[in-house]
Image 1: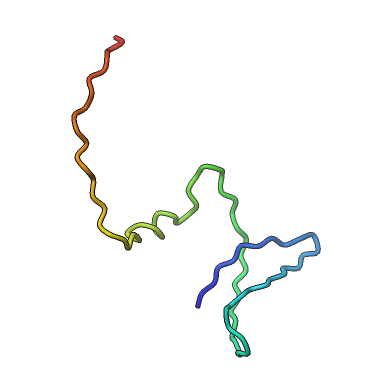
Image 2: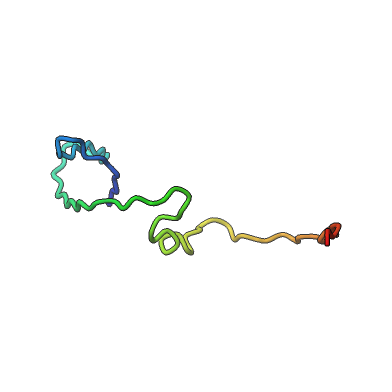
Length: 77
């Protein structure tokens, strides 16, 4: 099982974690990696987004329906 959490360290410099794992009365080995999160400008894609999501669709095949006729619009030249 892999769990990814995003948390905030307060002014005391101590990271507090409450992690529900869905198990009881069990011995666990936990590996913890702590790294700072780079802030992402609002409206932009997070680093690695496309690499993580490309080809991830597992549902029924996507079909592009017929787009019909393109409407003629008035030219403003």
